[in-house]
Length: 195
Image (cartoon, rainbow, N blue to C red; front, side, top):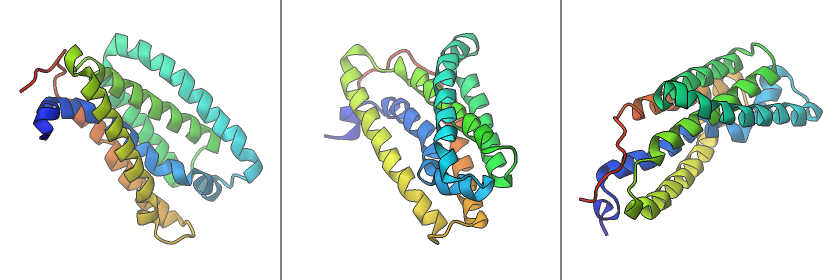
């Protein structure tokens, strides 16, 4: 079966958007504990509180994102969230602020981007294609997750985390993050038709 027989070309574009949204944050998630220790001197006993703060920020941001999308649209909100995500990368690179501030910004921006990406792609498939579309979207999310989780070991190289290697990883993450607003520039269709 060809790719076009499985789903029309434009269907692949919309199915990939949530995976694009998740790729950049997933580069950092596997190394957050050593990164926070390196940049902010966070001790092991402080980690649960910091991660709890990030989780609460993600939950609140997800709910607010839905309201913001209704008012300003998913493309604009995704752009703002991407800027916020890159700001969190900057704070981490320079070691500015506090670990809690970084985690709140990072998690909030991550989940707002995901909500925007899901909103952008949700209305695209027709009823007859929704099953194939959701299967493809889920597969792309898993593939992007696997790839993103493997990248830190390739970029960081040395098992001992250093500031220079972290900065390389943050540059890659920021570059990937910037692709979401660009990916979402295509005009959204209510449905797409079979070829």
